[in-house]
Image (cartoon, rainbow, N blue to C red; front, side, top):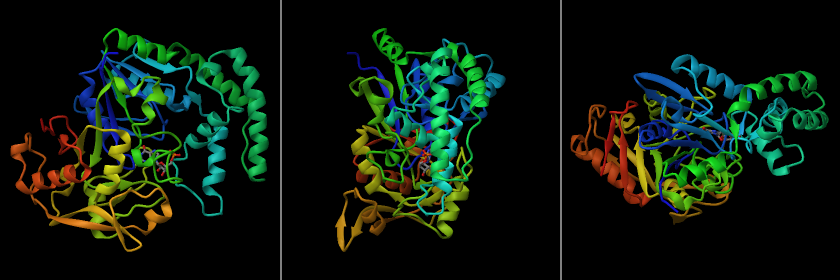
Length: 430
Ligand code: IMP
């Protein structure tokens, strides 16, 4: 099999600036693929001097010669997708079905998924995960449970959808009331009519994307897999239960797209030069005081999707090295280095101390991670504006030392450094 694909994977808890790198790499590829998550993800891409906020649509959508694929592993909220598509069409012109392919195997998010999530997340028993409230978890739950799942292929066949939806929605309403007697339920006929209209608009784009991707490989087209969220939010390998409900590490590429990972010749792991996290869950290097606030303001660390303030902290090399191992990355892209420009000194967590023991293993149980005390290596800040740097030699010695420390601790070489949102504000290390 030809080796002709690249993947871009976040190695932290999401929001690593994957959008910028995907956009940069898009012009070297023919097909860009989203393969997991849904409109919980948010990418900011600066293209042609304009800023675009993408959620479900792959970054390839901004490039007329590139095909964008929303593959099997994605969960699709049709309204969110169509709203996003309409906004793009308004700014960049029509998107023909040859340019956007959506998997008929992808599962559909319905209003009852959002209502179900609201019951879980706003309940009074204090076990909220801090989700994006987009119905992502309940939709994946139905996918795994199978009984109540509806896929895009079903939605786009009116007779199948009619047969299936009424039974499923009636059962879902019963379940909502069983979960909470005051729960809101859905108006079954109204949702059926609304979703039937979405189906009509989406149908031209819906197809078997797995077959398309294999045919593309056979024809020598280059694929770019666009990760969403980050490896530490992976449902199997992340900080469970404070994770998303799909495989957001490199492990998700195969099952989310139907394309085996061995076709990928470059697995790029993206990290921020510090760490952020949105929602609940352990975060050993979190900075709750002035320095954290400074990082948040300089890095504009507010969620693209929910607007929530992100929690900020020092770079956690224990967590990033673990993520790099499970995702199998072979090079790093280090983003947002310029956010640290004004720091007098910068810390990097090189190990944890748990119950008096030093370890560089990332704990599998959150009780242990909650106890982890970060052991820091302290480096001098560079106190220089990096945003004008264009090559390695333009960087101060302290910045180069910082980058070398991250790559040494994560045990992966750096291929790209980012020192601002624009494409030109990127340094190619090799
Ligand atoms: P869910 O994906 O909405 O179920 O949320 C589960 C967890 O993943 C929460 O902590 C969210 O804040 C987090 N999360 C989901 N998507 C993203 C993302 O794109 N960036 C960062 N965090 C995310």
